[in-house]
Image (tube, rainbow, N blue to C red; front, side, top):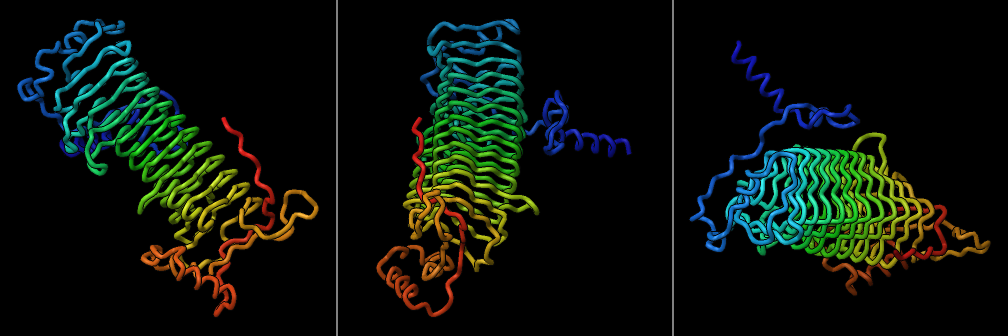
Length: 446
């Protein structure tokens, strides 16, 4: 019995995360306990002779860490140093942009295992290439740290935060190893981590930025290029994504099993390829999508079973969805999406609905449609008649994914023309906007 009670206590402790220094908000209670669960796999120790010869003559940076008193400021002499490094006491480490630490192609370069530390002006490079042990440049396992002006390069994973709260990660440049996209590591990962700020980082040629089981984070004014997911949320609530620029990634922002995420004033461009989408939803609920520009993507917005929770909505306000293959694609008939004040222009298809439309479950008000064929005789910028979008021959490629290859081909265009000219059956009404905006407002350039 005593052994069983001890095992039960251990299991309960393993489900509690965070530092418990503020009252819980409307998030999962497992993120607020005071006990840290050890979840990292043990990382192997590599002797110097197994690391690349380029670091054999370098001074170990760990010697400087060990000699610095807790709470002090360490300004190392400029130069190259050998890793790996483990920091388990609060220090300010300022490399001034002239200090690099190289792990010689094995393991993780820097492990930050304390709270209230500062890492600034360092270059971290040369991790191992093992996904089993998450080899990366920087592991963060503490709270209220500042990580800024780092260069992260030639590392499988970039910055990895696990059960780490209230950290500031800003002005870093992060890239992965020069390997195919699917076997790169994540540029930045938040796992059971809350109330962090991720600001003004530049990410390129990596895999994903992920936030899993992580709540209350602010991800703002970052730039991501040539990666897979710019941001992938899963079981993450009440996060803010604001002012970011995402170019040439397979997916812009993906909300999976999330609630309460606010995505506003971002630019998502050229998310192309077979799975390309600017903004994606999978069983997500209670989100606000506001003031974004989603352009030149295969699919601008892709929504699957969202909103998922009963009596919740996903609101699209004042976004520009332009020059995409499909502006918005819905693969379910749950309804609950509300689109107001958006601009739809230049898309091959503005809105598509897989499956039979049940009619009117989504709400459309005051959007601008560049193919609107009505008038505005009283010049109040509201169309005199409603905007209606019907599916004629479009239904072929909407219901048969393989036929999408022939979308806009002469054959399908001819079928669509004949269907509109003399329909054999009543076409499906996909949406009706009762008060379409007649003129498109000019967007302000920053």
